[in-house]
Structures are given as structure tokens and as C-alpha cells.
Image (cartoon, rainbow, N blue to C red; front, side, top):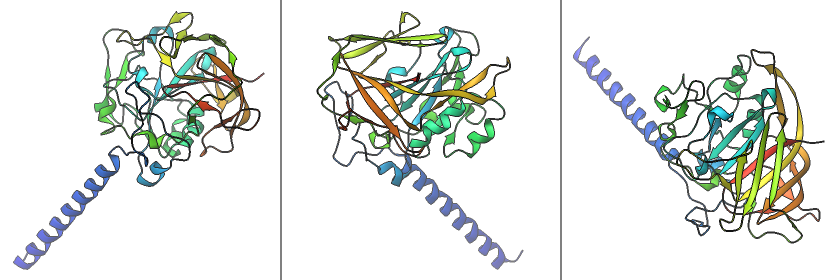
Length: 332
């Protein structure tokens, strides 16, 4: 190669390197947690308040939530990092058992888990967010191509080996844990919670209720109101739910959302078909907050929409600030 050729090649390599650095810098800037247009919100307990619906900054800057599929059989408890979630969705899976889909926006704990496999219903449910990061461990083989095509960032262990580890205090498969800080540089902030949820003062007309139990064929959840903690304390299968650090699992608002649950096309190795939970549509829901229950209507026209909850007179149903649990119960 001539001297001129070597110089041209060196300039081309420097240009390519600079372009790569600029692209990396842009990617890093997009990953930085965003702030809400009207500044920080605080609920009096040191937690940032979730935003009102309609906040769409995440649609512009590319930031989105972290969603983690969490094991919920008895052998998988207690959970780690669950109290840091903004939303906990409860879904029915094979054999009448349950699984959790925890959504994180305000805070990324050091460890989350145990992590288990994804389900077809998750793809529809997560469509409300802007390209969410989904952490999961495996899925039915015919479902994997659908996950690859879905508008989300799939991060299973085989793709992000550096982000997962096996614990030694319980047996496999109930011992897989996620270090979320290795998937996302920071928590994205409340603007990514494009769920349609509204937060504020409770509407009039609630009925006093201090305990509510929701049953799946092989799982049971009980929410008991604690006036001293201003929260609903969670119990699973008759036992108080605690995290691995000893804290009680508690929610500011509990939504029992009545939905259509049908058989999907997928099943496990034992021939148990996966229930498909339809979260697009409309129906009834019971919203628990402040020691009362409000019977409301829910509506989600399409998968890219959040879910709106309204009272029978058409007014928006406000949630209490803090973690929201949404339990998908089969409509009668």
C-alpha cells in the first residue's frame, strides 16, 4: 500500500471510531432517567409520586420501564426487590398457579427475583409501554419467535449472562436472580408509566372494606387494610408476604380487574395449557384504597393504550400514591 493509501485508511478508521463514540454517547444520553415536566413528586414517604396519565415524554426520548417475570410458587418465596416495583401484575398460569410481572420505573433495586419464564399474555400487557425491557428466563419454544418480534427489548439470561446469577439458598429453578443495574444504567423515572392510571384524592361513594381475597384455582391472594401503615398488606396462600429483607409486601392501591381468561395455543411439557389473560377490552373492576372498595369500569381499546378506570358516573378513578397491585381475575 502506498503512503497516500495508508493515510487515507487511517483517516477512515478515525472517522469510523468517532462515529461509534458519538453513537455510544447518544445511546447513553437516552438511557439517563428523565424527569417529569412539572418537577419531582413526593408522597410524603420519600417515594416519587407516579404521574397523571397523558405524560408521554418516554415516547419521545426512548426511555421505558423494566418489566421482570417473577416466580410465585411457594418454593420461590420470599421475593427479592418486589417492594421497589411501581406496579405488580398478578397473572394466572398453568395448573391454576400464579406468576407476577413487576414493573420498575422509579427505582432499580440491587437484585430482583426469582426470575421465571414469560407468557403470551405478557406481550399484550406490555404493549402499553414504549419498548420496555423484559427480563425473563425462557418461554415455550413456539412463543420465543413472538417475543423476538414484539416491540420490546428481551433480556433473557442467555442474552445478558452478566446480569443474572443463581442463588445458593434454594433449588433450581427457583433461584435465578437479576441485577437490573446491569441492564439499565438508571431508573427511567415516572414519565415512562404510560398506564392510564390516575393518582389523587379518592372519589366519594366508596364502601368500607378492610379485607379482600382473590382466588385462582391453585393460588390465593388476600389484601388486608392497615390504617397505621396506610397500605394494603399482602398475603399469599394464607401466609403474610414478606421480602427477603423481612419487610411486609404492601400496596397503596389494589385493583381486582375482571377479565376474560381463555386457553392459549401454548402448553407446558405436562400438557397443561397456558391461560391467556385478555387485557385489551372493557369490563368491571374493584379498586381498593384507603380501607374502601370502589366498583368501577375499566377500558383499554388497544394494546398500545393504557387502561382507564372510571366510576359509574363517568368520573376518573384516582389511585392512592404508592405501589399498585393489579390482580387479573376471571370474569364470571
